[in-house]
Image 1 (tube, rainbow, N blue to C red):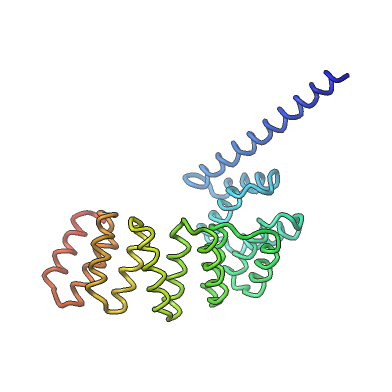
Image 2: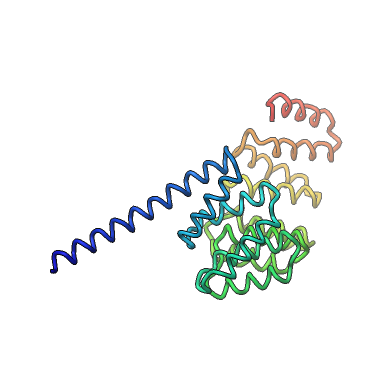
Length: 259
């Protein structure tokens, strides 16, 4: 009897393992389809993956990407909103994406309600935070976006991206002193991050701190030598300084590199 029970357990475990592997394979095929194939087919496969594994965070992220990249935000909100209403309350993934697509479609109050409901279960991941913050910023919910970015920066101290996004939001809202402090600390902690260096360089240029912008842009180019954005930043600085010859040389360099 004990041997038979053990055999059933082994078979059940193998079946669960095979089912999980099957879901992962379908998700990987769907991601490939979303990248280079048919986005409609990718949506169908990814939605099936989520139905089979409602905690597959990668499948949610790719679903959101397909909806956004193809301009289907209204359909995305309909899908994630309905999914969130049907899922158990202890599964916050769909609620986070419903919040993002509510914001993308202009439903600010609904976005904040979905966000609050999801946060009652767990904190958002970095990708969820950045996606929702982008949507909230787009509809003018800047305070809510900044709060979300600040929380993401605190939760992910070893990742510069949330802090760079927070600095951009602060600068956009006119709090340049706070933005400069945030970026200075990020650049100090992550001296090789091109995004942080580029954002800091662009901010300094916008404030008229040309020497500091040059210094940061040169560091930026050392980390990303083929960056057309970095070369363009130096071009703008040269134009601000009245050095048209240097600006022309930089423009020729950019054109010659094919960037």
